[in-house]
Length: 551
Image (cartoon, rainbow, N blue to C red; front, side, top):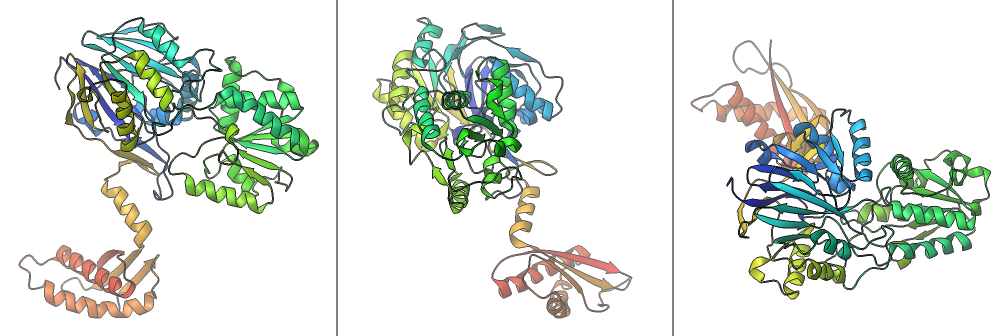
Protein backbone atom coordinates (compact mmCIF):
# COMPACT_ATOMS: atom_id res chain seq x y z
CA UNK A 1 0.00 0.00 0.00
CA UNK A 2 1.29 3.50 -0.90
CA UNK A 3 2.34 5.32 2.28
CA UNK A 4 1.62 8.78 0.86
CA UNK A 5 -2.01 8.70 -0.16
CA UNK A 6 -5.52 9.16 1.14
CA UNK A 7 -7.65 6.08 0.45
CA UNK A 8 -11.18 4.86 1.09
CA UNK A 9 -11.75 1.08 1.14
CA UNK A 10 -15.36 0.00 1.79
CA UNK A 11 -15.68 -3.55 3.13
CA UNK A 12 -19.45 -3.31 3.58
CA UNK A 13 -22.32 -1.01 2.65
CA UNK A 14 -21.31 -0.32 -0.96
CA UNK A 15 -23.29 -2.48 -3.33
CA UNK A 16 -25.68 -3.53 -0.57
CA UNK A 17 -27.90 -2.00 2.11
CA UNK A 18 -26.50 -2.68 5.56
CA UNK A 19 -23.26 -4.10 7.06
CA UNK A 20 -21.55 -0.72 6.75
CA UNK A 21 -17.79 -0.69 7.32
CA UNK A 22 -15.14 1.48 5.70
CA UNK A 23 -11.37 1.67 6.06
CA UNK A 24 -9.95 5.18 5.93
CA UNK A 25 -6.24 5.04 5.08
CA UNK A 26 -4.33 8.28 5.73
CA UNK A 27 -0.76 7.63 4.61
CA UNK A 28 0.49 4.91 6.98
CA UNK A 29 -2.43 5.14 9.46
CA UNK A 30 -5.73 3.29 9.30
CA UNK A 31 -9.10 4.19 10.79
CA UNK A 32 -12.18 1.96 10.76
CA UNK A 33 -15.43 3.84 10.17
CA UNK A 34 -18.39 1.85 11.58
CA UNK A 35 -18.63 -1.91 12.07
CA UNK A 36 -22.08 -2.99 10.99
CA UNK A 37 -23.81 -6.33 10.58
CA UNK A 38 -26.60 -7.83 8.50
CA UNK A 39 -29.32 -10.15 9.71
CA UNK A 40 -29.69 -13.31 7.61
CA UNK A 41 -32.82 -14.02 5.62
CA UNK A 42 -34.59 -17.37 5.57
CA UNK A 43 -32.27 -18.73 2.87
CA UNK A 44 -29.21 -18.63 5.15
CA UNK A 45 -30.02 -21.56 7.38
CA UNK A 46 -27.77 -21.91 10.40
CA UNK A 47 -26.46 -18.32 10.18
CA UNK A 48 -27.07 -16.05 13.19
CA UNK A 49 -25.41 -12.87 11.91
CA UNK A 50 -23.50 -11.62 8.86
CA UNK A 51 -20.25 -9.64 9.26
CA UNK A 52 -17.91 -7.96 6.79
CA UNK A 53 -15.14 -10.32 5.62
CA UNK A 54 -11.86 -8.97 7.07
CA UNK A 55 -9.38 -11.21 5.20
CA UNK A 56 -7.85 -8.11 3.56
CA UNK A 57 -7.17 -6.60 6.98
CA UNK A 58 -5.52 -9.79 8.23
CA UNK A 59 -3.42 -10.40 5.12
CA UNK A 60 -2.04 -6.85 5.18
CA UNK A 61 -1.59 -6.83 8.97
CA UNK A 62 -3.59 -3.63 9.27
CA UNK A 63 -4.08 -2.28 12.76
CA UNK A 64 -6.63 0.50 13.34
CA UNK A 65 -5.74 3.69 15.16
CA UNK A 66 -9.39 3.98 16.18
CA UNK A 67 -12.96 2.95 15.47
CA UNK A 68 -14.98 5.99 14.36
CA UNK A 69 -18.71 5.32 14.72
CA UNK A 70 -21.40 7.46 13.08
CA UNK A 71 -24.44 6.15 14.99
CA UNK A 72 -25.94 3.23 16.87
CA UNK A 73 -27.98 1.30 14.30
CA UNK A 74 -27.21 -2.41 13.95
CA UNK A 75 -25.96 -1.97 10.39
CA UNK A 76 -23.28 0.33 11.83
CA UNK A 77 -22.40 -1.25 15.20
CA UNK A 78 -23.83 -4.79 15.07
CA UNK A 79 -20.49 -6.41 14.13
CA UNK A 80 -18.42 -4.57 16.75
CA UNK A 81 -18.63 -7.25 19.49
CA UNK A 82 -17.04 -9.69 17.04
CA UNK A 83 -14.65 -7.34 15.22
CA UNK A 84 -13.37 -5.53 18.30
CA UNK A 85 -12.01 -8.78 19.71
CA UNK A 86 -9.82 -9.11 16.59
CA UNK A 87 -8.97 -5.43 16.19
CA UNK A 88 -9.07 -3.70 19.58
CA UNK A 89 -8.64 0.06 19.34
CA UNK A 90 -10.21 3.11 21.02
CA UNK A 91 -13.83 3.63 19.96
CA UNK A 92 -15.17 7.13 19.32
CA UNK A 93 -18.84 8.01 19.15
CA UNK A 94 -21.57 10.20 20.56
CA UNK A 95 -22.96 9.48 24.01
CA UNK A 96 -26.05 7.48 23.04
CA UNK A 97 -24.08 5.51 20.45
CA UNK A 98 -21.44 4.57 23.02
CA UNK A 99 -24.07 3.48 25.52
CA UNK A 100 -25.55 1.09 22.94
CA UNK A 101 -22.07 -0.26 22.18
CA UNK A 102 -21.33 -0.63 25.89
CA UNK A 103 -24.50 -2.69 26.33
CA UNK A 104 -23.48 -4.96 23.45
CA UNK A 105 -20.00 -5.36 24.87
CA UNK A 106 -21.38 -6.32 28.26
CA UNK A 107 -23.38 -9.12 26.62
CA UNK A 108 -20.23 -10.23 24.79
CA UNK A 109 -18.19 -10.02 28.02
CA UNK A 110 -15.85 -7.37 26.61
CA UNK A 111 -14.71 -5.36 29.61
CA UNK A 112 -11.53 -3.65 28.44
CA UNK A 113 -12.83 -1.43 25.62
CA UNK A 114 -11.80 2.22 25.59
CA UNK A 115 -14.90 4.26 24.73
CA UNK A 116 -14.32 7.95 23.99
CA UNK A 117 -17.29 10.31 23.81
CA UNK A 118 -17.02 13.05 21.29
CA UNK A 119 -19.21 16.14 21.09
CA UNK A 120 -20.63 17.67 17.96
CA UNK A 121 -18.42 20.29 16.30
CA UNK A 122 -15.47 19.54 18.61
CA UNK A 123 -12.46 18.32 16.63
CA UNK A 124 -10.61 15.17 17.69
CA UNK A 125 -6.95 14.95 16.71
CA UNK A 126 -5.12 11.81 15.55
CA UNK A 127 -1.81 11.35 13.81
CA UNK A 128 -2.35 12.40 10.17
CA UNK A 129 -6.05 13.11 10.77
CA UNK A 130 -8.51 15.55 12.32
CA UNK A 131 -12.12 14.41 12.77
CA UNK A 132 -15.05 16.69 13.52
CA UNK A 133 -18.45 15.07 14.14
CA UNK A 134 -21.59 17.02 13.30
CA UNK A 135 -25.28 16.21 13.91
CA UNK A 136 -27.48 14.87 11.11
CA UNK A 137 -31.21 14.16 11.07
CA UNK A 138 -31.80 10.41 11.24
CA UNK A 139 -34.10 7.83 12.83
CA UNK A 140 -31.87 7.42 15.87
CA UNK A 141 -30.64 9.91 18.44
CA UNK A 142 -27.09 11.27 18.34
CA UNK A 143 -26.47 10.37 14.69
CA UNK A 144 -23.34 11.99 13.27
CA UNK A 145 -21.67 12.84 10.03
CA UNK A 146 -17.87 13.07 10.08
CA UNK A 147 -15.58 15.71 8.55
CA UNK A 148 -12.08 14.34 7.99
CA UNK A 149 -9.24 16.81 7.50
CA UNK A 150 -5.83 15.66 6.28
CA UNK A 151 -2.85 17.24 4.55
CA UNK A 152 -3.77 15.18 1.49
CA UNK A 153 -7.36 16.40 1.29
CA UNK A 154 -10.64 16.66 3.20
CA UNK A 155 -13.45 14.10 3.20
CA UNK A 156 -17.05 14.71 4.22
CA UNK A 157 -18.63 11.43 5.36
CA UNK A 158 -22.39 11.96 5.78
CA UNK A 159 -23.21 8.77 7.69
CA UNK A 160 -26.94 7.99 7.45
CA UNK A 161 -29.01 11.15 7.13
CA UNK A 162 -32.03 13.02 5.91
CA UNK A 163 -33.18 16.62 6.21
CA UNK A 164 -35.98 17.23 8.71
CA UNK A 165 -37.29 20.78 8.57
CA UNK A 166 -38.95 20.48 12.01
CA UNK A 167 -36.34 18.24 13.59
CA UNK A 168 -36.44 16.61 17.02
CA UNK A 169 -32.63 17.00 16.92
CA UNK A 170 -33.21 20.80 17.03
CA UNK A 171 -30.96 21.40 14.00
CA UNK A 172 -31.01 20.55 10.30
CA UNK A 173 -28.47 18.46 8.41
CA UNK A 174 -27.62 20.94 5.66
CA UNK A 175 -27.13 23.80 8.12
CA UNK A 176 -24.81 21.62 10.18
CA UNK A 177 -22.77 20.86 7.04
CA UNK A 178 -22.22 24.60 6.59
CA UNK A 179 -21.17 24.96 10.21
CA UNK A 180 -18.70 22.08 10.27
CA UNK A 181 -17.09 23.02 6.96
CA UNK A 182 -16.73 26.69 7.83
CA UNK A 183 -15.82 27.48 4.20
CA UNK A 184 -13.24 24.67 3.98
CA UNK A 185 -12.92 22.66 0.78
CA UNK A 186 -14.47 19.19 0.50
CA UNK A 187 -12.22 17.16 -1.78
CA UNK A 188 -14.45 14.05 -1.52
CA UNK A 189 -18.03 13.70 -0.29
CA UNK A 190 -19.35 10.27 0.75
CA UNK A 191 -23.14 10.25 0.89
CA UNK A 192 -25.96 7.85 1.91
CA UNK A 193 -27.77 6.43 -1.13
CA UNK A 194 -30.53 4.37 0.54
CA UNK A 195 -33.41 6.48 -0.82
CA UNK A 196 -31.78 7.82 -3.98
CA UNK A 197 -34.79 6.73 -6.07
CA UNK A 198 -37.36 8.53 -3.87
CA UNK A 199 -38.33 11.90 -5.32
CA UNK A 200 -39.01 14.99 -3.22
CA UNK A 201 -38.57 14.84 0.54
CA UNK A 202 -40.30 12.93 3.32
CA UNK A 203 -42.39 14.68 5.95
CA UNK A 204 -41.09 15.54 9.42
CA UNK A 205 -40.74 13.08 12.29
CA UNK A 206 -42.82 15.51 14.37
CA UNK A 207 -45.79 14.91 12.03
CA UNK A 208 -46.04 11.34 13.33
CA UNK A 209 -47.46 12.59 16.64
CA UNK A 210 -50.94 13.70 15.41
CA UNK A 211 -51.47 10.36 13.63
CA UNK A 212 -50.66 8.34 16.75
CA UNK A 213 -52.89 10.58 18.86
CA UNK A 214 -55.69 9.99 16.37
CA UNK A 215 -55.33 6.20 16.65
CA UNK A 216 -55.18 6.36 20.45
CA UNK A 217 -58.31 8.52 20.51
CA UNK A 218 -60.55 6.55 18.17
CA UNK A 219 -59.55 2.91 18.70
CA UNK A 220 -61.64 0.98 21.25
CA UNK A 221 -59.05 -1.69 21.99
CA UNK A 222 -55.37 -1.94 22.77
CA UNK A 223 -53.08 -0.27 20.23
CA UNK A 224 -49.90 -2.24 19.62
CA UNK A 225 -47.13 -0.30 17.86
CA UNK A 226 -44.21 -2.23 16.37
CA UNK A 227 -41.18 -0.07 15.71
CA UNK A 228 -37.40 -0.07 15.88
CA UNK A 229 -36.18 -0.02 19.47
CA UNK A 230 -33.48 2.48 18.50
CA UNK A 231 -35.92 5.08 17.13
CA UNK A 232 -36.00 7.26 20.22
CA UNK A 233 -37.88 10.03 18.40
CA UNK A 234 -40.69 7.59 17.57
CA UNK A 235 -40.80 6.33 21.15
CA UNK A 236 -41.10 9.93 22.35
CA UNK A 237 -44.06 10.50 20.03
CA UNK A 238 -45.76 7.39 21.38
CA UNK A 239 -45.14 8.34 25.02
CA UNK A 240 -46.42 11.86 24.37
CA UNK A 241 -49.52 10.54 22.57
CA UNK A 242 -50.20 8.19 25.48
CA UNK A 243 -49.94 11.07 27.95
CA UNK A 244 -52.33 13.24 25.97
CA UNK A 245 -54.91 10.47 25.52
CA UNK A 246 -54.64 8.85 28.96
CA UNK A 247 -53.22 5.52 27.82
CA UNK A 248 -50.70 3.44 29.75
CA UNK A 249 -47.67 2.09 27.89
CA UNK A 250 -46.27 -1.42 28.16
CA UNK A 251 -42.87 -2.19 26.65
CA UNK A 252 -42.41 -5.65 25.15
CA UNK A 253 -38.93 -6.58 23.93
CA UNK A 254 -35.52 -6.69 25.60
CA UNK A 255 -33.95 -4.05 23.34
CA UNK A 256 -36.86 -1.70 24.03
CA UNK A 257 -36.26 -1.87 27.77
CA UNK A 258 -32.53 -1.33 27.27
CA UNK A 259 -32.81 1.58 24.82
CA UNK A 260 -35.60 3.29 26.77
CA UNK A 261 -33.56 3.11 29.97
CA UNK A 262 -30.47 4.52 28.25
CA UNK A 263 -32.34 7.30 26.44
CA UNK A 264 -34.22 8.28 29.60
CA UNK A 265 -30.98 8.36 31.61
CA UNK A 266 -29.32 10.59 29.00
CA UNK A 267 -32.29 12.95 28.83
CA UNK A 268 -33.22 12.01 25.26
CA UNK A 269 -36.62 10.60 26.29
CA UNK A 270 -39.12 12.45 28.42
CA UNK A 271 -41.98 10.52 30.04
CA UNK A 272 -43.60 9.98 33.42
CA UNK A 273 -42.66 6.76 35.20
CA UNK A 274 -46.30 6.07 36.10
CA UNK A 275 -47.12 5.96 32.38
CA UNK A 276 -45.31 2.61 32.01
CA UNK A 277 -46.87 -0.66 33.10
CA UNK A 278 -45.66 -4.25 32.90
CA UNK A 279 -47.02 -6.50 30.16
CA UNK A 280 -48.43 -8.83 32.81
CA UNK A 281 -50.50 -5.94 34.22
CA UNK A 282 -52.22 -5.03 30.93
CA UNK A 283 -55.35 -6.98 31.96
CA UNK A 284 -55.81 -4.65 34.95
CA UNK A 285 -56.78 -1.73 32.70
CA UNK A 286 -59.59 -1.18 30.19
CA UNK A 287 -58.28 -2.10 26.75
CA UNK A 288 -58.88 1.39 25.35
CA UNK A 289 -56.51 2.76 28.00
CA UNK A 290 -53.47 0.68 26.98
CA UNK A 291 -50.76 0.91 24.34
CA UNK A 292 -48.05 -1.71 23.80
CA UNK A 293 -44.75 -0.83 22.14
CA UNK A 294 -42.98 -3.90 20.85
CA UNK A 295 -40.11 -5.06 18.70
CA UNK A 296 -40.60 -7.20 15.60
CA UNK A 297 -41.53 -4.69 12.91
CA UNK A 298 -39.36 -6.69 10.47
CA UNK A 299 -41.04 -10.00 11.29
CA UNK A 300 -38.11 -11.27 13.38
CA UNK A 301 -38.63 -14.64 15.03
CA UNK A 302 -38.84 -14.53 18.84
CA UNK A 303 -39.50 -10.76 18.81
CA UNK A 304 -42.29 -9.24 20.85
CA UNK A 305 -44.68 -8.92 17.90
CA UNK A 306 -43.92 -12.44 16.70
CA UNK A 307 -44.83 -13.84 20.10
CA UNK A 308 -48.03 -11.76 20.20
CA UNK A 309 -49.05 -12.87 16.70
CA UNK A 310 -48.61 -16.57 17.50
CA UNK A 311 -50.30 -16.26 20.90
CA UNK A 312 -47.11 -17.01 22.80
CA UNK A 313 -47.56 -14.45 25.58
CA UNK A 314 -49.14 -15.82 28.72
CA UNK A 315 -50.18 -12.39 30.02
CA UNK A 316 -51.68 -10.93 26.85
CA UNK A 317 -53.82 -12.04 23.92
CA UNK A 318 -54.91 -10.11 20.86
CA UNK A 319 -58.58 -9.16 20.69
CA UNK A 320 -60.58 -8.36 17.51
CA UNK A 321 -61.01 -4.78 18.77
CA UNK A 322 -57.25 -4.25 19.01
CA UNK A 323 -55.11 -2.44 16.42
CA UNK A 324 -51.60 -3.37 15.33
CA UNK A 325 -49.53 -0.56 13.79
CA UNK A 326 -46.28 -1.17 11.90
CA UNK A 327 -44.49 2.13 12.47
CA UNK A 328 -41.56 1.23 10.26
CA UNK A 329 -40.49 0.60 6.70
CA UNK A 330 -39.76 -2.81 5.21
CA UNK A 331 -36.04 -3.44 5.02
CA UNK A 332 -35.32 -5.20 1.69
CA UNK A 333 -35.22 -8.95 2.24
CA UNK A 334 -37.78 -8.94 5.05
CA UNK A 335 -40.89 -8.93 2.89
CA UNK A 336 -41.78 -12.59 3.46
CA UNK A 337 -41.47 -12.71 7.28
CA UNK A 338 -43.42 -9.44 7.55
CA UNK A 339 -46.18 -10.75 5.28
CA UNK A 340 -46.31 -13.92 7.38
CA UNK A 341 -46.73 -12.03 10.64
CA UNK A 342 -49.31 -9.64 9.12
CA UNK A 343 -51.31 -12.64 7.91
CA UNK A 344 -51.15 -14.31 11.30
CA UNK A 345 -52.29 -11.12 13.07
CA UNK A 346 -55.15 -10.73 10.58
CA UNK A 347 -56.38 -14.21 11.51
CA UNK A 348 -57.02 -12.94 15.03
CA UNK A 349 -59.55 -10.45 13.65
CA UNK A 350 -57.68 -7.32 14.74
CA UNK A 351 -56.97 -4.32 12.52
CA UNK A 352 -53.46 -4.26 11.02
CA UNK A 353 -52.08 -0.94 9.79
CA UNK A 354 -48.86 -0.57 7.79
CA UNK A 355 -47.13 2.43 6.21
CA UNK A 356 -48.80 1.46 2.92
CA UNK A 357 -52.22 1.90 4.55
CA UNK A 358 -51.48 5.11 6.43
CA UNK A 359 -48.59 7.29 5.30
CA UNK A 360 -48.26 9.31 8.53
CA UNK A 361 -47.29 6.44 10.83
CA UNK A 362 -43.69 6.26 9.64
CA UNK A 363 -41.06 8.56 8.21
CA UNK A 364 -37.78 7.40 6.73
CA UNK A 365 -34.46 8.22 8.35
CA UNK A 366 -32.78 8.42 4.94
CA UNK A 367 -32.87 11.39 2.62
CA UNK A 368 -34.97 11.52 -0.52
CA UNK A 369 -33.60 13.07 -3.72
CA UNK A 370 -34.37 16.64 -2.65
CA UNK A 371 -32.38 16.12 0.57
CA UNK A 372 -29.45 14.49 -1.25
CA UNK A 373 -29.26 17.31 -3.78
CA UNK A 374 -29.45 20.03 -1.14
CA UNK A 375 -26.58 18.47 0.83
CA UNK A 376 -24.42 18.10 -2.29
CA UNK A 377 -25.02 21.74 -3.20
CA UNK A 378 -24.29 22.81 0.37
CA UNK A 379 -21.00 20.89 0.58
CA UNK A 380 -19.90 21.75 -2.99
CA UNK A 381 -17.44 18.85 -3.15
CA UNK A 382 -14.79 18.49 -5.84
CA UNK A 383 -15.38 14.74 -6.07
CA UNK A 384 -18.20 12.48 -4.96
CA UNK A 385 -18.63 8.86 -3.83
CA UNK A 386 -22.11 7.43 -3.15
CA UNK A 387 -22.22 4.84 -0.34
CA UNK A 388 -24.80 2.82 1.62
CA UNK A 389 -26.90 1.24 -1.10
CA UNK A 390 -27.15 -1.41 -3.78
CA UNK A 391 -25.39 -0.80 -7.09
CA UNK A 392 -28.60 0.70 -8.52
CA UNK A 393 -28.87 3.11 -5.58
CA UNK A 394 -25.22 4.15 -5.91
CA UNK A 395 -25.54 4.69 -9.66
CA UNK A 396 -28.67 6.83 -9.24
CA UNK A 397 -27.02 8.92 -6.54
CA UNK A 398 -24.00 9.45 -8.80
CA UNK A 399 -26.36 10.72 -11.51
CA UNK A 400 -27.86 13.21 -9.03
CA UNK A 401 -24.37 14.50 -8.19
CA UNK A 402 -23.57 14.99 -11.88
CA UNK A 403 -26.87 16.85 -12.29
CA UNK A 404 -25.67 19.14 -9.49
CA UNK A 405 -22.71 20.16 -11.65
CA UNK A 406 -19.98 17.73 -10.59
CA UNK A 407 -17.74 16.41 -13.36
CA UNK A 408 -18.58 12.78 -14.28
CA UNK A 409 -14.93 11.78 -14.00
CA UNK A 410 -14.94 13.05 -10.40
CA UNK A 411 -17.97 10.97 -9.37
CA UNK A 412 -16.71 7.54 -8.34
CA UNK A 413 -18.86 4.43 -8.42
CA UNK A 414 -17.27 1.99 -5.97
CA UNK A 415 -18.41 -1.27 -4.42
CA UNK A 416 -17.13 -3.34 -1.52
CA UNK A 417 -13.44 -4.07 -1.91
CA UNK A 418 -12.73 -1.19 -4.31
CA UNK A 419 -9.80 1.03 -3.31
CA UNK A 420 -10.64 4.68 -3.93
CA UNK A 421 -7.76 7.17 -3.95
CA UNK A 422 -9.04 10.53 -2.73
CA UNK A 423 -5.76 12.42 -2.40
CA UNK A 424 -3.45 14.14 -2.93
CA UNK A 425 -5.09 13.71 -6.35
CA UNK A 426 -8.56 12.15 -6.59
CA UNK A 427 -8.03 9.14 -8.85
CA UNK A 428 -11.14 7.14 -8.04
CA UNK A 429 -11.02 3.32 -8.04
CA UNK A 430 -7.45 2.14 -8.60
CA UNK A 431 -7.64 -1.51 -7.53
CA UNK A 432 -9.85 -4.08 -5.84
CA UNK A 433 -9.05 -6.08 -2.71
CA UNK A 434 -10.72 -9.08 -1.14
CA UNK A 435 -14.15 -8.46 0.37
CA UNK A 436 -17.17 -10.55 1.19
CA UNK A 437 -19.17 -11.82 4.13
CA UNK A 438 -18.39 -13.78 7.26
CA UNK A 439 -21.15 -15.88 8.80
CA UNK A 440 -21.63 -16.12 12.55
CA UNK A 441 -22.80 -19.71 13.06
CA UNK A 442 -23.09 -22.04 16.04
CA UNK A 443 -19.52 -23.09 16.68
CA UNK A 444 -17.68 -20.16 15.11
CA UNK A 445 -17.37 -17.49 12.42
CA UNK A 446 -16.78 -18.72 8.87
CA UNK A 447 -16.25 -16.97 5.52
CA UNK A 448 -19.11 -17.18 3.04
CA UNK A 449 -16.94 -19.43 0.85
CA UNK A 450 -15.79 -21.61 3.76
CA UNK A 451 -15.87 -25.38 3.04
CA UNK A 452 -17.23 -25.81 6.55
CA UNK A 453 -20.28 -23.66 5.82
CA UNK A 454 -20.74 -25.26 2.40
CA UNK A 455 -20.73 -28.66 4.09
CA UNK A 456 -23.41 -27.47 6.49
CA UNK A 457 -25.54 -26.24 3.61
CA UNK A 458 -25.08 -29.53 1.81
CA UNK A 459 -26.24 -31.40 4.89
CA UNK A 460 -29.23 -29.10 5.30
CA UNK A 461 -30.42 -29.39 1.71
CA UNK A 462 -29.18 -32.87 0.79
CA UNK A 463 -29.43 -34.95 3.93
CA UNK A 464 -26.84 -37.64 4.63
CA UNK A 465 -26.36 -41.34 3.92
CA UNK A 466 -23.82 -43.34 5.94
CA UNK A 467 -22.84 -46.77 4.64
CA UNK A 468 -20.67 -49.11 6.70
CA UNK A 469 -18.75 -51.96 5.01
CA UNK A 470 -17.12 -54.73 7.09
CA UNK A 471 -14.05 -56.66 5.86
CA UNK A 472 -11.55 -59.11 7.33
CA UNK A 473 -8.09 -57.87 8.40
CA UNK A 474 -6.86 -58.21 4.84
CA UNK A 475 -8.59 -57.99 1.50
CA UNK A 476 -12.01 -56.75 0.43
CA UNK A 477 -14.26 -59.74 0.99
CA UNK A 478 -17.56 -58.36 2.30
CA UNK A 479 -18.62 -59.75 5.65
CA UNK A 480 -22.38 -59.57 5.90
CA UNK A 481 -24.75 -57.02 4.41
CA UNK A 482 -23.49 -53.39 4.52
CA UNK A 483 -25.26 -51.23 7.13
CA UNK A 484 -27.08 -48.10 5.93
CA UNK A 485 -28.19 -45.11 8.01
CA UNK A 486 -30.29 -42.29 6.49
CA UNK A 487 -30.96 -38.73 7.68
CA UNK A 488 -33.25 -36.57 5.57
CA UNK A 489 -33.42 -39.08 2.70
CA UNK A 490 -36.85 -40.43 1.65
CA UNK A 491 -35.68 -44.01 1.09
CA UNK A 492 -35.99 -47.23 3.05
CA UNK A 493 -32.65 -48.00 4.73
CA UNK A 494 -33.16 -51.77 4.60
CA UNK A 495 -34.02 -51.76 0.91
CA UNK A 496 -31.02 -49.53 0.16
CA UNK A 497 -28.77 -51.81 2.21
CA UNK A 498 -29.61 -54.75 -0.05
CA UNK A 499 -28.29 -52.83 -3.07
CA UNK A 500 -24.94 -52.01 -1.44
CA UNK A 501 -23.27 -55.39 -2.11
CA UNK A 502 -24.02 -55.08 -5.82
CA UNK A 503 -22.73 -51.47 -5.91
CA UNK A 504 -19.61 -52.52 -3.98
CA UNK A 505 -18.76 -55.43 -6.30
CA UNK A 506 -19.18 -53.29 -9.41
CA UNK A 507 -17.11 -50.45 -7.94
CA UNK A 508 -14.40 -52.80 -6.66
CA UNK A 509 -13.92 -54.37 -10.07
CA UNK A 510 -13.27 -50.93 -11.57
CA UNK A 511 -11.20 -49.54 -8.70
CA UNK A 512 -8.83 -52.48 -8.30
CA UNK A 513 -7.44 -51.82 -11.79
CA UNK A 514 -6.07 -48.43 -10.67
CA UNK A 515 -2.32 -48.17 -10.16
CA UNK A 516 -2.52 -46.63 -6.66
CA UNK A 517 -5.43 -48.68 -5.40
CA UNK A 518 -5.97 -48.42 -1.60
CA UNK A 519 -8.71 -47.91 0.99
CA UNK A 520 -8.97 -44.16 0.32
CA UNK A 521 -9.42 -44.68 -3.43
CA UNK A 522 -12.00 -47.38 -2.79
CA UNK A 523 -13.93 -45.21 -0.32
CA UNK A 524 -14.06 -42.25 -2.70
CA UNK A 525 -15.19 -44.40 -5.64
CA UNK A 526 -17.89 -45.97 -3.47
CA UNK A 527 -19.04 -42.54 -2.29
CA UNK A 528 -19.50 -41.40 -5.88
CA UNK A 529 -21.24 -44.65 -6.89
CA UNK A 530 -23.71 -44.58 -3.98
CA UNK A 531 -24.42 -40.89 -4.58
CA UNK A 532 -25.13 -41.52 -8.28
CA UNK A 533 -27.43 -44.41 -7.46
CA UNK A 534 -29.48 -42.28 -5.05
CA UNK A 535 -29.50 -39.36 -7.49
CA UNK A 536 -31.05 -41.56 -10.16
CA UNK A 537 -33.69 -42.71 -7.69
CA UNK A 538 -34.60 -39.29 -6.24
CA UNK A 539 -33.28 -36.77 -8.79
CA UNK A 540 -31.23 -34.84 -6.25
CA UNK A 541 -27.71 -35.08 -4.83
CA UNK A 542 -27.13 -36.14 -1.27
CA UNK A 543 -24.13 -36.42 1.05
CA UNK A 544 -22.60 -39.86 1.38
CA UNK A 545 -20.25 -41.14 4.08
CA UNK A 546 -18.43 -44.43 3.44
CA UNK A 547 -17.09 -46.23 6.51
CA UNK A 548 -14.71 -49.22 6.40
CA UNK A 549 -14.41 -51.54 9.39
CA UNK A 550 -11.98 -54.46 9.60
CA UNK A 551 -12.33 -57.33 12.06
